[in-house]
Image 1 (cartoon, helix red, strand yellow):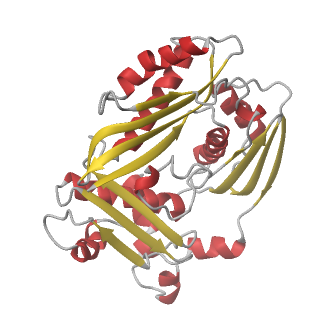
Image 2 (cartoon, rainbow, N blue to C red):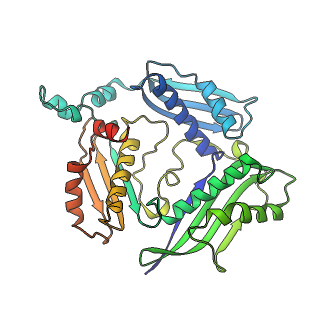
Image 3 (cartoon, rainbow, N blue to C red):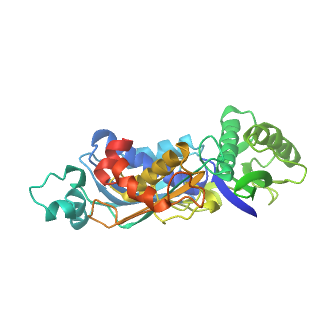
Length: 350
């Protein structure tokens, strides 16, 4: 059976990804001085303006404007004339209480329930996935797309390709036969550049200096479609051309079109938010199942209720590739082998 799967990646200067990085930098700053900080930080940015909103409950007040400037500069942007504003308040006391003292703990006063003493910071379903496509146990399109944007950023930072800027994207489509990647169907690369940049030269540079090394796992053939800056010129980019928002690159942050997504964003959220920590744990579990050769591919889904420590659902799907036992047996074994409460996840993954 033949199918096609596509994954996208963006460079560090893409407006949405810049906002993700600002949100995480604010979180990091809080955790550096107060490890118990509770943060759910959102960022919106457009031409000349950056807005930070959300909840920050911490014993440390982060220098938000300094953090914004530092991230923008690291991403290749000038901060002169940037207007910044914050709309931040503390976490709801109702949510804070439910997270600090779980329903299990409240219902079993005096019992030894340390691992279940803290509840999940939100409800929702989180999905983790792994497969044997690549050494990273990630889907082939995802790995190739990320390699392209990393190479593109490295070429910009080192000057290996001149007169390109930090906003860019890559998209890779891979053909699968009987569940295995067999050929590269298409590659799309968009890279912001200077007004005087020769587009034919840029095309040749990206093919030689970026794609040649980035696509070594699955090289293009004579029928692979390679499109570089298909819009033509890409001079106006970054925040002059687009608005950035945290949490808008969920599929870039995970597995592309191959795997469903629960909908929760990662960036700007501390580990009490299972949107992030349980998604990481689900990936960790799936990766271990595939690495142990129990299956060639594995999807782990964890669902939580706010204020409750134990997940309300654990599901495993090995897509018919299981080699040891049925999927429901793997699901039943997960809480016996892996810690899936918020406290256990924090301890396991650090």
